Amino acid sequence: MAAYESEKEENRVLREELKTASDRITGYKKQIEELEKKIDNLGLAGAFLGGDGNVEAKRQIDRMIKDIDRCIKLMEGQ
Image 1 (cartoon, rainbow, N blue to C red):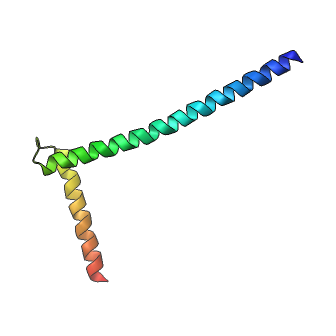
Image 2: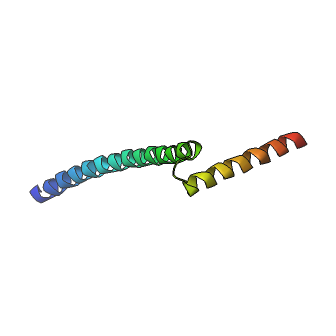
Image 3: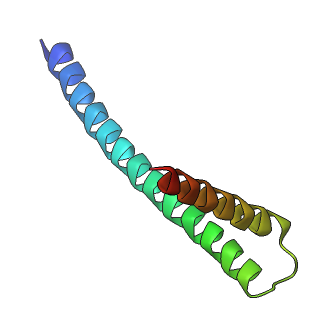
């Protein structure tokens, strides 16, 4: 009976540790998303400021312009 209680307690402790780890992972994922957005924004800001020729930021701006143009054409058609 003591072995059962011991295993039961260990199981409870492990479940708590798993939940704590899962919560931390969720927090880290949110933090990563926020940092990735900041990186994208900084890249775009650098391109607007005429930075060091950040090619990827310029590509993103070009894609945004194309999307806006496409939206305008769709709106004009309605």
